[in-house]
Image 1 (cartoon, rainbow, N blue to C red):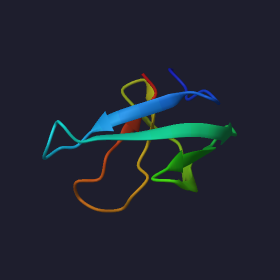
Image 2: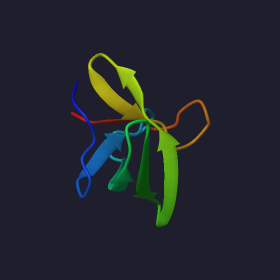
Image 3: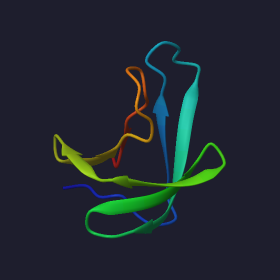
Length: 70
C-alpha cells in the first residue's frame, strides 16, 4: 500500500473545473490519522484505503477533493 509521508505535498483536481487544483502538506502522521495543512489551516483526518492507496477527504460535501498518496 502507498502511504502518506510527512513533509510531502499532495494535490487533487476539482471535479467541476480541472484548472482548479487543491493541495495539502502532511505535517504529522500516525497509523490511522494524518495531520495536514489545507487552505491555510491545520486539519486532522482519518486515513482510508482505496485501490491500494491511502486517501484523505478533508471536507464533507459531494464535490469535495479526495487526496491520494500516489
